[in-house]
Length: 266
Image (cartoon, rainbow, N blue to C red):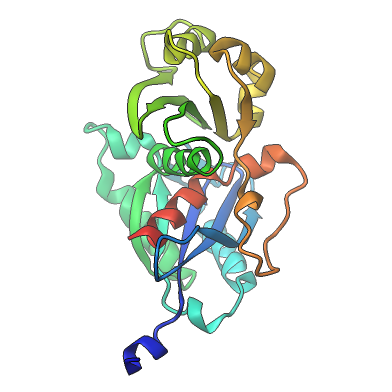
């Protein structure tokens, strides 16, 4: 065996950071370097933010964000294999997808805040893209390969949804901002004419419920079983995964997990 192989950690680690209006979430995921082994979640944590620290796409109170990230970094496990692991942070959809919104200041702000907390960002990705990656991964782990499913993510700017067939996005919706008058009609259009195997929901489920969309209501619109995203299902067995008794809180980790998933899959 080559010396290089003996010195190389047997697992690849990566972290994902999601900054929301009320809290900062962080997920550490890992995957065996050899073969296509399952992705495991080694640690999850969150730090609350005072109201007004984040407003839409704007990081208003940078000091509060640095403090929150620093607190999470201090609580992270100190495994030798985790040293130098890549960290990614999400940016709002409005910054990533709207050409009229200048992205550079928002990106720079996130890089500077992370650096002030002792974290060097290796990548950034849009919140919806990271959420879709997480939800699709969860679907692939629990459904048959040819399953038809819907992935839904609730962010501060509304509801994003995708219909996935054969590992490809066949249709997508966004509410508000699309052509539909209400979220129910958007969901029915997303479901399409053929039966779905499942719908997976991540993000701020409280926002959906305040809009009158409980999981049962979503299921009625799309015509299939609806389940929330759950990070705990990917526990790597390391013994440090924070358990979230409230499934609504657990569903909020979809973006952070999607970011970490990208880091261990490269």
